[in-house]
Image (cartoon, rainbow, N blue to C red; front, side, top):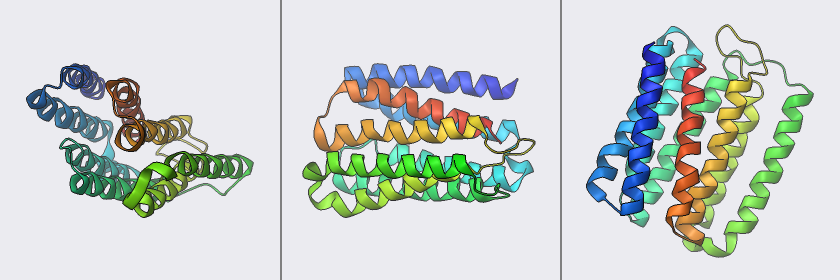
Length: 212
């Protein structure tokens, strides 16, 4: 019951965040975004994150991503870079979760890894002319998120066996939502990026939070 309530409250905060982004309401952004992120953390806690090593890794990942969400609120290169670092650490924690008690690699894993390699290369090719001094950090970030999604094909959450569709969809959704952030930061800023990127991002985090 509490898990569903926290997920619903996260969705409500995302709706408020989108309204704030559209109206450029700074105070509401600072209220709605951390609240939305806090609710995906609470979703994991209420779902039993403390009951397994997998759950603890996921909880750590969600907390790091919440820090990244807050760091991305201000408009500035230093805070954006710090946010990337927090999200990179979050992806590393997700990798830890997915590899804890992981299944042996199979055809699905190798297909997923190949797909994410292509995804990463195409993403870098698209962004590269726009990155400037961010080329190194973005390349490193793209690599770690590709590894994270590939690792999701090995995940064995508590009481589930690999492949866990909830985890794979959540990890892939997270990766795709990052394209909206990258487009907004480096290619073409605008509300459209947030309109699809934010709901996808928070939905992906809720799926991962619920997998514990």
